[in-house]
Length: 583
Image (cartoon, rainbow, N blue to C red; front, side, top):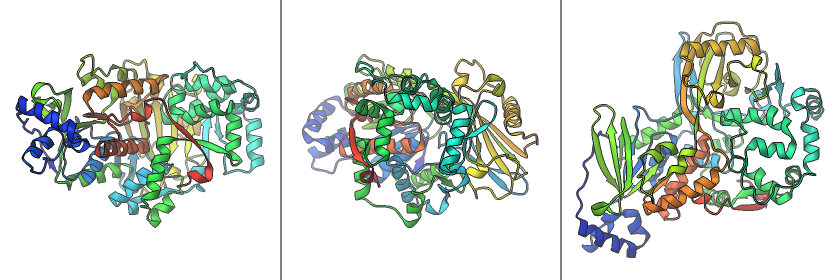
């Protein structure tokens, strides 16, 4: 691997390109992959020049895409563009020296869940990267896995789960105000008609209110989506984000009826593309003994933080002779080549250090930058306009990490707590989304005793803000929240505040239809431009790594030309018994 700032643009003869294009169409998929250079070489019976592939964005999706490309196409010439001075995107782990030892502060994602099937793709990557010995697991029997709280209206309420007896869970549901209306809502749900056929999508809030009433949506589910999307359930798409519930309602006429059927051995929905992936993973076993254990855990991370995943990918790319990384290089324009470069993608990028602009040509481009950014830099001709991507906004979250010397400062133990939209303002004037009890959620990461927590502020609550709190104000807000909710009045020994601007895309109502539209528009790039990342198929780390795997597979074997094929024609479902879905 090399790290440079510029590479020369290759001149091309126009007549030669026309001949190459004609022969490429006749030569099939191999010529498509190898681009114009393949047909030039075939004319002289020499080996085709390797394809040139650009990866836009050096976050986790971009790093994983570049890694899969370098692994599966060892002869390809891969160039990764990153606008900033560091790779890893939202994965940002920092070891902080507090004098008597070090603690790990996470400013972005903090753990991974070994879900099926996307989590298995991540475990496969962990195996490839040799990270098994760096894993820290949180058991399903741990206090963090069994104790999860929601703050309502003025106290922490434990959510029903396996950590308590059935009787205690029932008493909790019957006595806590947060659950008022949820039981009657569930009982009446089975009598309600399924959605009308013309309703193609609606918000999660509208969907759940229509089926169960508003209590479940406002008091419980809104808190869950504060933790995942930092978003407003009355704007987020039900069809895109809770697709299995959307499918169950249509098939069973009732969500409760469908879930009960699953619980007692009936069938459950799985997207056809997920089923195909599971079959592929089952036919290519990779699990070490360590990963078999991890697969059964609640969540896992790494000893040096989740950022180790990005660091190891970067190290692997450093070792690759066919990878060029251009940091501090911002892509400003992308378009399908014309005239001489008719079967290639042209990129214009600017170095942030010297403001120098350079033009590049590639056979293929994998864009992992935000959909908004891609839409703004893509050619705005009628056939290559990607403007539907502009409809996907993103929220800004302030993350405040705090470490206290007292290891027993928390009144309760567990993973942490989330705040629903229905919490009174006087209980949440800081507009917090949730608090993670890191010391319980990840044990063994720090080498000094104490208590570590993370407070998340903002998200959709800050959508209309013209300016955000500064670091000092953010620290004060976090400490005030912890004092009000948990009674913590000690000063932290270490604190770190970070503002993550536009970090989580919001899949609004109509997201799947827009992605289908974008997929069709991307076809105007003749299969040369593909997309992957958290703007499209999921915002979680597992989703991003799965997207990288899928987009590279589609490029290598010719099964996909946009990265968004799963949206075309709507999501397709298979209905199988639970035992058939075990990995």
